[in-house]
Amino acid sequence: MNNNIDTKYITAIIFSLVLVIAVFMFNSRVLNKISESNPPLVGTEETNINNEMSPAGTTPNIVDGDLSDNYISNAVNASGSYSLWQNMPVNVYIQENPYKKVVESAFTTYNNTFNSLIMFSFTENPNNAQIKVTFPNRIENANADQYVAGLTNNFSSGKYIQSSNIQLLTQKNGVNLPSTAVYNTTLHEIGHALGVNGHSQNKDDIMYAQTESSRTAYLTARDIATLKIMYSNNESLISQNTAGAASEKLKEAIQYTQQVPNKTAGWINLGNVYYDLKMLPEALEAYKKALQIDPSDANIYASMGSCYYSSKKFETAAEFFGYAIERTVDSVEIENYEYMKALSTLSAKRYDDAYVQYASLVNKYPNKKEYLINYLYLCTYLKKPEGKDKLQAFLQSHPEAANDTNIQQYKNYYKL
Image (tube, rainbow, N blue to C red; front, side, top):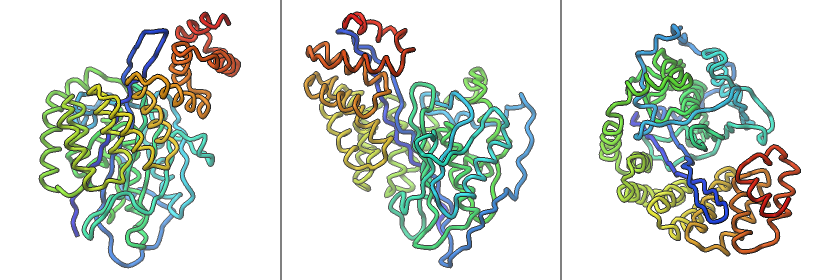
């Protein structure tokens, strides 16, 4: 049994382009925070599923304000920033599965621990969910000794998470995983879905890179303190604990690729750290090594596209976002990759192609103001008459948008 752990982060940075007449304004946006955890490999005999999960351990009480013992330096990215949910509760959809109640109980553990600070609610409609939990047959190529049991993919805009996809493995080689393994992995992945962008170095914490399957885990005082600091926006305490985080994260990421050179997880994590440090050539090389191991991973292509975009190689960026679109069926990922492809095409000054791509985005996602604004810019630049009708339709559905500065300029342009 090999208890080595895989940690996979893929970060693609979106630049939200606001085009008003001929003015280009860029606001950084983060796409695709991805993390994963590996519990030990279970035995070969089928394990019964226990849907009545409850923590065997006891979540310790923590006095408000007593937050000194934490791992904030591991929770932020190499640049010292992080994203979190702006409003509570966060709505969760869990795909039908024999382990559904197990997963739901993990979310309930957070509700019981944090009260109103962090809260989850549940929906049976995936279209109403902010977090979606699914159960794929495979997350990453596995070998006989280790496997990837959980994967979390966050989509963020600025400081705030917009949506999150959690994937959980429930079987290995056709054998059900223990309920404790699925529960513990879910607790871990929820931490990533809440914005924890790394792992604790303490094996007792739920955000340690390796999850247990032999016993039911619980949130430690350090887990709770870290999330309380993040969601209390205690910038002073964060800054006190993140000094030297960049060098530590880079050191750990390089060390991991040396220990496990044949897993995509290590190279993707290294690429993420390099990206955060604005070391773009090094980030690209790390992503390329991950791609050599698993050329089917859409998020690697998207991350490479972001590197090319940040390097102002817009044509190549558009090409790689196109590759990412071809390799995913996830609707949220497709939307983000389509947006980034259109943005890259526009930045490459291929205006006619960009117009076609933004027209498609506006038709598919008529409620997204940022897509409409870029589309209206192209309509005015290319003198396309369709922009006026799209703007009128949007304002009928979203009258509050009439106060937006960018929208007002286009209202004036079209004399609305």
